[in-house]
Length: 602
Image (tube, rainbow, N blue to C red):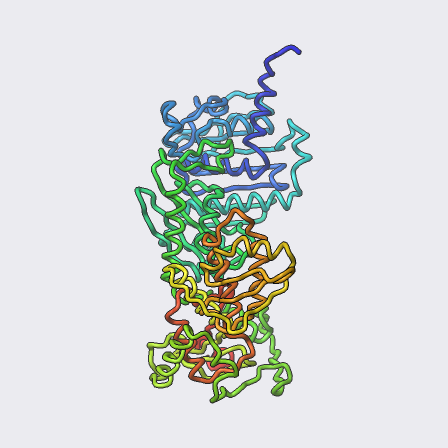
């Protein structure tokens, strides 16, 4: 077979396929060029999802008339001074491939007026065939008009999605670029209709721009991030654990203003939130890394969406550490959107906010509505059987709570007034009320104590007077016995007990009277998911969460007023008490002013 050089047009179309995957790629490349040119306002217009038209206009420096043909040549760029600059990329673009790649598969026109020039100039390219430079009318800046994308490569058109899907991708791309550049104004129109408008955000940290894109609930529940380590600075905002989503699409990372996707960062986020958010749920955040360009390689892929850090461990440690510090500083703060949703459900018209005159139906006691149970003056049945290591501080807190000044500001979560449906504690605060899920709250308290005990190696075991025999299949027994030594370090002592069963002789003292059989079965299932390669100490969060869930106060247990107050005081002194181990809120706060509005008092 004879080797031959490919024609230049074919080479250009192959190269274009690496850089221009879809209309959103065109938008990305053109907007990045505008940002590199110092634009303060960028307008994007698309038609038919970008197939028919993509037009990007900016007020940047512009391109000189004599440089317009060179701008369309492959590997021609104004952003690298010499070959060594590849080791220190300061601009968003640098390959010199975007414009020639777009021109190879579309009909492209460039109209530009250089800063200080008397007139603008235009050049037109159709499927790689370049026309001559001619005068045109335009104010300062550059306008690029891309028509009939992929008309020169019809096969690529077949792989494009619907106009709506392509438009969604373009919108997401503009969002990311706008988040990275809050001082720049952006306008996006689709088929003549306004789709996005972002005015320059001069506020601190660009939070207003983030709120416009990620939603007001995120901004209302955001924790500020600002940390630095060995010349690498991390800023941005992270949502409280109870403000989470079903996918990671609301986790944004920017490296030196460049929107990127990086698995290292997603892994670091999971590690920071591992004890706070349930599996399958993802916190919302926007993080901005600033570091010496020599410490990061952005020349990994033609789309420049991936980066490679020189010291990935340092970056990962910085992200985990900064997030954990912010989350710890949040105390027992939970998402305010939970309270807003609760208030919305009580407003006329329900949570839709329709403003109608419908009234809430009032059900008699026991009829399915809100029922009130007077707190029992007697301890709940079985409370005396709680774990000794938990009971002592619980009793002390209960005694102190009974003597406390109930109007004191020293009790952020207020003082208990009732227990509803044997599950929820209603507490009065100085400016509203708190509704606490007693099981979720106690689960977090036990979980944090268990983590502390495991961390300092002070796990105390409690020998069972009557050992528990648990029936399991042989595969589950084998998994547990293989990890028997590790489980013993965590306070759980097990042995094989004939065929198809095992015996539990000791449990962590913190568990108290837990359902040992269910606990062992759940641990066997978790070990099946972890596999053999992962040490249990590396997964302390999951193991502790399972142990805590089986040992905390259950829904339906009647508590006295003093015992409810004791639980509230423990929540106030427990890290991350605003959410349980599965990422659900442990309480909802309703301000008195909001409650008064419900009754027309304000």
